[in-house]
Image (tube, rainbow, N blue to C red; front, side, top):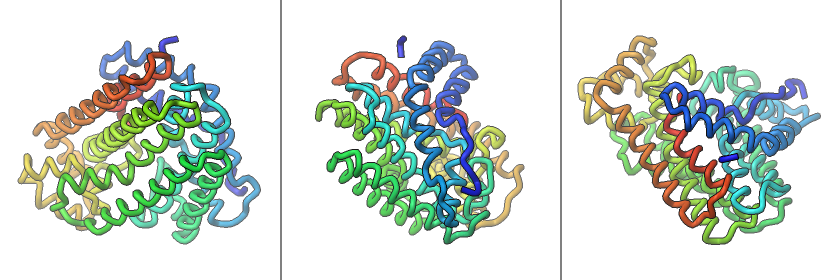
Length: 356
């Protein structure tokens, strides 16, 4: 091969691979799509184990906070972070009990941030369903996120690596600081590009970095190899967020489950929008209105998306994502050739092609 009340239902948690595969097929990248199909087979057993562990989180719990957390976990998330934990472990000795614990933990931390984000952003929908805060209330959503964070930290601690736990504590600190930075800049079109990437590094890339390090440590990868994996995770995380931001302004709402300009409507400036301010000055009054919270119809989102495509903003942002992914691949030069390395290359090359 080349490479409680609302019980959780079994869902295809590694569907992100299928999403990447479909994106490659739509772009005529059949060889890459074929490698992704092989990747699904390669990771199937590992991810089924992660799936079962996540499905058991909070079974029998009855508090609104735990029900709030379980509601979100039951939705079909991308699960990319557990995937990269598994691949990093396979760079070494393979997917073992520690890697499984880290894969579950990173997904719990990610979901904890989403529960908190939906309260801060007053979000009504998440992953195509009512947000947990809508069903259980804001307080339950916040406490549900806190509970998932503690559950994740306990799992990491039980896995026995003080260094992996310490790095997760640093990551949580980074995420809080980045969220605070984003909150301070909410509703301001004059966010700088450097601020944007600082926020992305803290909010998104930090958890990818940790996932790669934790998986590598679990698999017994050398210190040099782990740091190469960390650099890969940083660049992949930023590229992943860039694609997310492109989808927010020019994606297919049917595929993404989000209305166009949802992030801007929450007062968040993203890289595509920062580029648009320079290339499409005629859009500034409209973007200001959306950023200020004015209601806009889908035709407005469609108009902005069309202009961002025709002006080259979308292509420029995706080109940056591809460049970051190629840099991530280049950084794997010290990693021994094998199925796991080939799979990491495939994930990086496919990430800019996803459409969900």
